[in-house]
Length: 334
Image 1 (cartoon, rainbow, N blue to C red):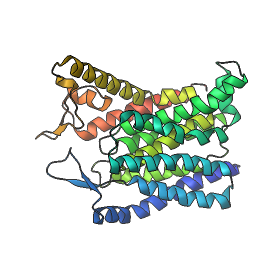
Image 2 (cartoon, rainbow, N blue to C red):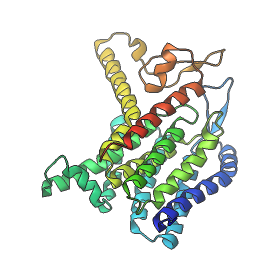
Image 3 (spheres, rainbow, N blue to C red):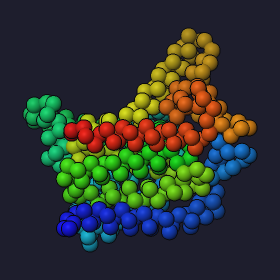
Image 4 (cartoon, rainbow, N blue to C red):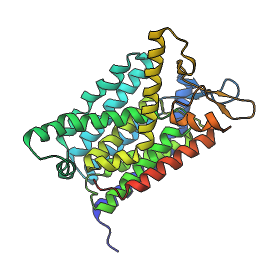
């Protein structure tokens, strides 16, 4: 059985990044604890604090693999992919430490961080657009400098928003990245995917210590890093429609949250009590181990709003939803 060099490199990079992350995680946890970079886990009994900003380790491992890519598969494409993801991670660090309150800034500033994607777009990416629009110079410019950067920005923000429980973001992202790699093999587009394989391997390894009971959180740093890498992967491969299908639960979560914010603003303007539209960031742990949520206006809060559920059970439902939409997306063209 002949295995192409590209396929071999993908497997090697995924495995190496997985092993490097697994080996480095205990030391990373110790460093974060000793530095006081911990946050409270609100869904555990008592004052349980967990190291945060663990996404820095994923970024460091990917940077190591980027250096290795010069030997295995020298390509400037990898550098641009990592540049985009790292810029989003830096923005996540700023958000973690400066507590940026302007939501419009948090949503739209990353758009400009996505611009370098125009330098690496493959023919299949533009080919997807050509199925829906005439390929004119104006269409090409619009795709390169508006649609593609916005797509990356939206995916990164949705990944960051659809988190909050142990292993939720890292698990969902591992599922999506796995299916993106699988779809790439199915359609025969496996060139220049080694660095995406590194993101997958590092994120999957991180999930082993981020899942319930979590011993490390990724922080906005990790969510934005992985979200940007995922959005870049989708656009790079031209999976614009199937990517929407894969991320359908993320989209529903965003729309529910958007509705929540709009209703809250309307209540404030009318001077009426906001009720369930008030500002809530966390639910609370009940004595029986189930989660009590303040409303049903994010996807992860919807199941426990109607049925008593533990944190682990909620996360497993979210995994199942995303795995289902990803499986469907394997057979969606474009």
